[in-house]
Length: 314
Image (cartoon, rainbow, N blue to C red; front, side, top):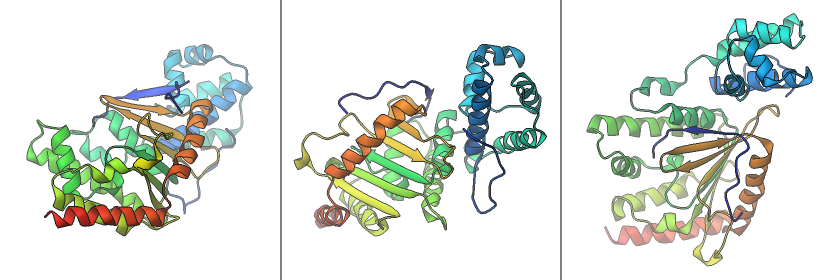
């Protein structure tokens, strides 16, 4: 991967720093984003099966083509009246399907736990939290910093203060609280499978002093628990590798009808890729990157070595 894939369909969000529809099993926790995306995928499938163009669908609900695109990608809700109008246009008269879609639409309007932080979180970052919270599988590559899901409080606090220099102390603590709440997904009774690939630079970059770094690296060793949570290091000796273009996250979902999502971060926001072509470019890149990393056991040995070096300097 010598260049970042050009997204066929991407949503830019300001952030600092399809099959049949059925009611989900009560044993599976689903959040609003999953329901919206399932609803959108089904509406798209029916529109294409009926041979209806996006412009025609938009005209039927008094919207425009971008609105239909957002609804089909799960980025915007769909009202009951809009569902009824679209189903009539697509020639669908199955009452049970109509009920299931309406239920998905209603449930998709429920707010996630992060809604209480609306005053400090951008809509883009809330989208990131929603995508992350839904996932059954998360593959992360980070070349610069420890990912938020694995950060200690002190490490996170220093990063947040550095990025949000104008934030008050109360705001900083609220951001830290958000980060701690994010990490709760790893403590669930059925947590997502998490594969975290770190460039060796992450272990060497001193954030907030040697004592904080020693504790942060110690935490990485403590939480590593393959195959549920696997941390691997890409060593400097590897030279060129598939992650040199930058950090990325791949989110996978339990329902095969749910699309995988790739998240790319940059200075003023993020891109979310959901179309098959761009997502499919990142899957082999992630596998190649993991193959070039040290095995988890050897990675832990290396992390322990760096942790001791930092601890000796305190």
